Image (cartoon, rainbow, N blue to C red; front, side, top):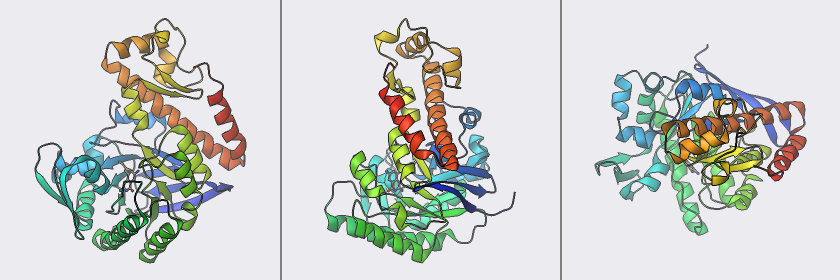
Length: 373
Ligand SMILES: CCCSCc1cc(N)cc2c(=O)[nH]c(N)nc12
């Protein structure tokens, strides 16, 4: 494999598109869903099981790994891929978003963010420069710029100031990233739901130049309608020949709507987190396995699903092990949810390639309306 990073746009169907990201650690078929491996593990999953679901790439978290076990220790042990036994591509977030959502006693200045660890209260600093160094030590293939993501709703002047700070941080991230063949730095568009601010952000990022571009600042409480309204224009403001990554999204219908509007990559904790709380995503909608009505049900969750939970176990069994708080419950339901999310992505990739995305989308929504779950 050449020591290069590239993106090939392949087919389009409306605003939806397929492509492939080529990295020294393998290819990522787009549109792609990226499971979140926050603390060097996709919770309740072995890496080989994550690969079996169809994931080409997973996410790591700068914020969590810098606090524990530290990026320096992971570097000494051979980097994040070796550490977690995942030899395919890894994308790491830059940490600022998690600081604002997880840590206490934080102070944001032009330089960066000082904060106290949510684990032991120790004091830390994150800046464009330190975030790039941490992500370099981790060895991630796709590095995210250090940015600030304002909570919505917020007034336009606050969103504008925050976006312009993130653009200055994007410039510093680019400078600190340096020349790293085979690795990519993605810029993150900000600007809330404001078309003019998002255009300003997109222009600023393109002036700097990145290997990919994320739509940040969404999935922060604005709701699906507002998010789709923003996605009706934001992806189109970004370069057509580079990957477009929508951060932190989402539920299955969010994902379908985002791909329909030109998004190539997404990530969300939902399938894994829900697997641990008994929420099961199926083509007919969500099954809450803890519901008593499943106690005697001999049927699988979904008789068309290829995952071990659906091939080998009844709803009655899954209900039992969830209620009994057995570890196998989180393992099987997470495995199912991740498989279902990957099968949605594969279905969309095939439909876009065939020019039948609209029909696929109609079938997707009809299946969820069918009920009887
Ligand atoms: C591992 C989690 C990755 S996505 C986290 C995330 C989620 C959402 N919703 C928005 C943002 C954002 O604007 N910037 C950054 N860096 N991250 C964001």
